[in-house]
Length: 213
Image (tube, rainbow, N blue to C red; front, top):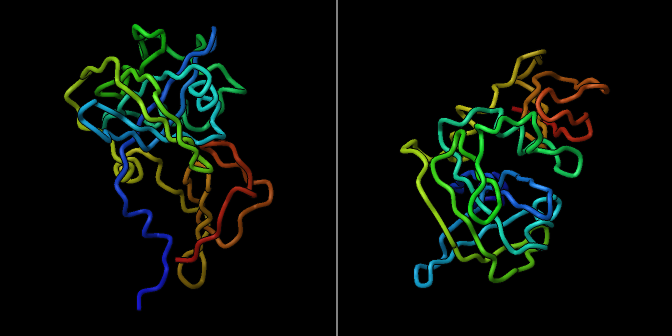
């Protein structure tokens, strides 16, 4: 009898997207991995956004958002910018983020042009509470192709975009890995220093899990 194994979740295929929203003068965005066409007549797209994300609250308040489909041409900087910091703490569309990386859609919400291949403007028609996430059932009001580059999957991100772990220690039997539960960065070594800070997302030791390989 096969055992219950949470790693089966890693076998599910995901795309990756930047979900953006505008509320008043505030523009924001976050990385999501669930944007799916769920019906063709009428054309309907569902997206799931973590309730902890500031973008979630903006979508819920305005009932509108854009999703930009991340392509294989994206760099890790795109994921760091929209995935490893909160819009509650930083302005993700400040002068530090190059205007050439995005544009404003007709709905007044930015879409990402660098490292993406398409974008959709969405009007939320229905909300479903899923516990940690809200499922937004949306009607696309506009959509277009930005490039012919292939879409980036979660698997491609893990294998080709995310920085590889740096070996900083060895173990006598096999390998002990400390994996950041926030961004996936891996530290190799028997012990993780108490003052260790993830070089990618800047989280501390409490957000690392120990894995024996």
